[in-house]
Each structure stands twice: as C-alpha cells, then as structure tokens.
Amino acid sequence: MIRPLLMCFILCVVYATSKPTEKKDRIHHEEPLSHLEHDDSKGYDYDHEAFLGKEEAKTFDELTPEQSKHRLGLIVDRIDENKDGFVTEEELKAWIKKAQKKYIYDNVDRQWKDFDMNNDGLISWEEYKNVTYGTYLDDPEPDGEYNYKQMMARDERRFKTADKNGDMIADKEEFTAFLHPEDYEHMKNIVVLETMEDIDKNGDGFIDLQEYIGDMYNHEDEMEEPEWVATERQQFNEFRDKNKDGKMDKEETLDWILPSDYDHAEAEAKHLVYESDSDKDGKLTKEEIVNKYDLFVGSQATDFGEALVRHDEF
Image (cartoon, rainbow, N blue to C red; front, side, top):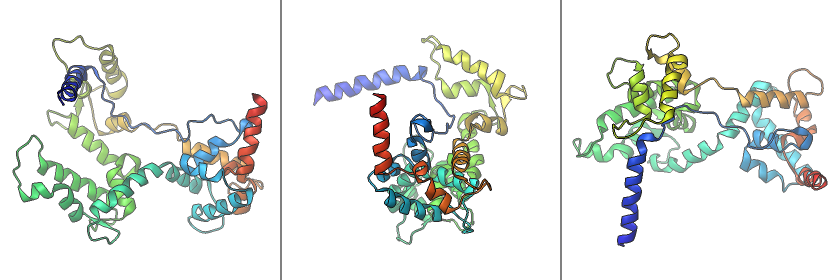
C-alpha cells in the first residue's frame, strides 16, 4: 500500500516541478481527414476515410461491390440535403465535415443520458444546470477554490449561444455545439471571449504580452527560462499583435486560437467532384457517384485489388 502511495507522491512532485516549463497550447488545430497518404495511383484508402471517417470506412471492406454500391446510394440520399437530385460541392463538403466529427457525436451520445433527465430527447438549461451544479445549488457557499456561481453564469452564456432558437432547450446539434464550441462557426466568438477571460488578468478586455506568456508559462525564479518562451515573445510581437499596440484584441485573439487553416474538407470535396463529374456540370448525380463507387467507398473487390498492388510492389 505504501509503495503505490509513494509512487503517486513522486509523480506529483515531478509533475509539479516540471509544470512551469510545459507549454500550454490554446490553438485549435484542424485534424487531417486521414493519416494515410493521398495518392490515388496507389489506391483510394485516403478518400474512403475522408468521405466516411476511419471506422465507418472499414465496414465497407467486407461488402461485395453490389452491397457497397447500395449503401453508397443510401448515403447519397442523405448528402443531398435539398433533395434536388444532385450533390453539390458544398453538400459534399458539409457531409465530409460531419463524417469527421463522428468522434464528437459519439462523445455527446455518451453524455446525453446523464443530462436528459425526463428522456424527451432534448436537454434544457434547467436539466443541465441541476445535474452539473446541483450540489452547489443546494449549498451555495461550499468550501473550495472554485467560483461555482461564475462557472454557472459562463455555462449559461455558452448554452444561450449554442441554442439557436432561443428556447433554452437544446437538441442534439445544439448540445454538441455547447460541448464543442470550437467546431462551430456561430460559437467562435464565445470561444474567444472565454479564452480572453481566462488570460486577461487585469480585466482591461485585452491580452498583453505579460498575460500571453503568463498563460503558457508559470515562471519560477529558481528555474532557467526555457527557450520556447523567448520564441513566443517574438511570435506575440511580430505576428499575434497585428496592429502593434502591445496587446491582442478580440480579432487578434481569434486569429491566434482559431486560425483560418487550409480547408481539408473543401479540398477533398473538390477532388471527389472533379474525379466523378462525368458530364462536367459542376455537380454530381447519384449515378455518377455510384459509377465511381470505388473512389468513395471500399469493398471486398477494392480491398483485394489494393492487396494485390501492395503484393506486386513488395
């Protein structure tokens, strides 16, 4: 019993002493659509994972070509949001982004039952508040370092932003935006606001150099400053503080934590349309997509074919 406790104590000491040199990263980076190489001459595995998500793409590899085509046809019906019989580049881009968010939706599904107390398929602010802050509401002045009243007000503000129709009752998509605001365009301002509130210690509504560095690095006089701190000071002065007034405003903070990176989903949508659009009208019919089914999804045939290619290369 003593040995595990001692090991826990040692780990805590190591963590406490090393923590000041660790860099906190507030930048939200967009994940790649697939970690596979994108080279169509060697196969379409990258496109399959981009179009379906990694786990869903695997399920097609056990299907016959006819089964894959049938399932793909059903997916096309879901992609065609306005039901006009065509899949546009924008609809394809939206589908790819949704497929890539599957892990987020799975996370929300796991939490859903904990908050939907009346099982009506919706989560109201009252339900979320009672589950999350019930103990505080029963005893408004608990001991501890956390300001629960402030945390609850912050959550309520975020909930209101996620709740597009303003009824303070969230459906699945609204609750997902509440839990994962960095992935939703209409939630970006709340991400910026919360970040600035965390870092802006003097309450002037801006982030100055000292606050910027202080958020990433807990300085201790006994320790030598790590090299990356000087690099971050340079980053702040040369790139973060665009108007050179010595501090970051909301727009500059937005550019910092939610940079406008290369849009992988848009690039993949363009690629899929280009490769499948046989009549070159800039949009896809179900027939065009199914005719190029091996570009979008796998099957026993494509999996076997790619295995042969790998064997020949070997």
